[in-house]
Length: 341
Ligand SMILES: C[S@@+](CC[C@H](N)C(=O)[O-])C[C@H]1O[C@@H](n2cnc3c(N)ncnc32)[C@H](O)[C@@H]1O
Image (cartoon, rainbow, N blue to C red; front, side):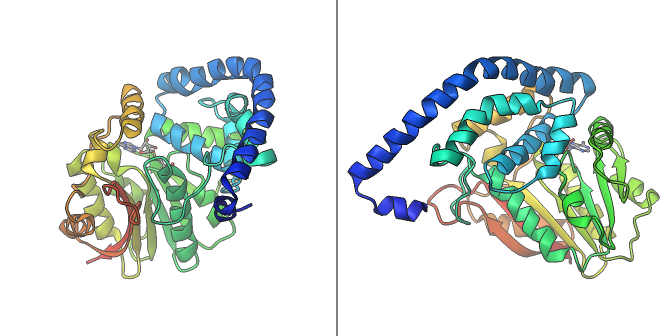
């Protein structure tokens, strides 16, 4: 039953459907409680303790978790991320199932909980629903350009497997960059999971101390080829000057027809002033060593603010998607496409 159909039902019927859903959910959750106690301990140890020890990006683990959830809540099939998590030293597939399992089963049986893992209509995103739609928005960008590009570059790929999903058997060169520890664990995990990845070039780099564009060129990037840059949820964690330099570098590396796709958070979001939930999320990430550092002032005219920032970096905005645009909420996040000016 669709959400619209449900809204048309009489109130009393909706009440009994909800009651039935909750009655069904409770015993499932009770069965899961002892498993969840063990699962949480394992998951928290791997996500926080082990990841800190191995120097792996916690924000990248969080993004991977969301893709795992999207798979099981049927909003984005992603068997690669599931296989990856099963072999990943900094996350527990069992732990994730133990915590989410009752909700996943209940949602599949009766549709409860309604909102968790669900996608909203474009323009109706809020801070809570951004994580899923963001992933689908970048999927769409990849689908739009995959057949016309000769190179794809992901500077700050984390544990995103979008390149593996879309570029196998394609005539395209792929480069993924990220900090050494994160990237090394990614490659080790792919090997352990028997996920083929040999057509991708992995380049360890720290933007704060090294030139990522020099490393990219050394690794075989060709400046004469049409390239898609996918820069998903990275700028939030970098100093403003580094974001500017990185975008200028991308502009310098682009030939006609190349596209730079990226997202921006608002300054208010980066400063934890957007909502209580985002403040909590940022404070956890900060405790794990990744403070939010960069956001654009979107309080007045967000589109103009993004456009002018891109122009400062030698880029022209060609697409602009502002999340939550149809709602009466403060602008907090957007995904944009740009090309060299
Ligand atoms: C939120 S994650 C996003 C990962 C991926 N793009 C995704 O959507 O799943 C941010 C990524 O930026 C990378 N990153 C942050 N600071 C960096 C730096 N100074 N040099 C290189 N990578 C960095 C982190 O290692 C992490 O993988």
